[in-house]
Length: 245
Image (cartoon, rainbow, N blue to C red; front, side, top):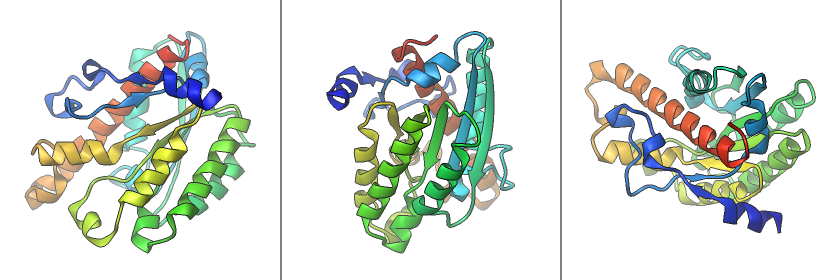
């Protein structure tokens, strides 16, 4: 019943909530589904505190391998601007070749140490490249979802980034399906990074792979900014759906 209720409460993310920058717009052909996030909603009220734990592989990090310039940092910057009465803090745990199993151990270690209201979990790429069983990814995500729920936090799953090179070396569909399935749970939302980055690349708006060598760094930075901005707007919509601001 709870699963059905979450599905019935799913909201279509309005294109108007996307970044004001033209090349950050969510394409009309892409529907971003927002689910109520009650813990985020409560934390973003005036006087509230939102503590965010972000887990992922190297693509979640900034250009120098840290928080600065990362997708979560841009997300937090936009959330702070939209909810000046709330305090928002970010903890980022990411590293190269980190699998979902690795991150699950980090998650189980971090949750008891601090009271988080939101967990961002970017994964799937390492499993696809290693051709590990998609069911292993699904199991890890389900276990992490249960741990996050028990700790009193909401969860956002972030799938892989679109890459022609990656698609040429791995069958991504089973891993994307595993993440979509894991996200159909109360208090869980999927941020479809793959679909977004593919749409922007195919439209010729933000495509680091096909850009000139000297432009790749700035275009990659723009891509991180757009992802962070779109994620922030999804969370704001989710907080309103969950009874927040």
